[in-house]
Image (cartoon, rainbow, N blue to C red; front, side, top):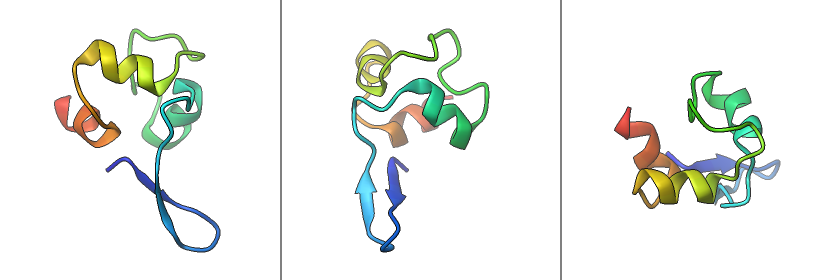
Length: 60
């Protein structure tokens, strides 16, 4: 899903200003295919018509 654990083990949502490049390190080079590496997650979500990273990942 769109959450990550921080150093304290707390779960947090991915921020909409997270860069695609950063997310590709976690989800692979095919993540957000067709988008530039400097695109922001919020932009990708809006263009793909989904509200969260989890929904985007399930859309594949």
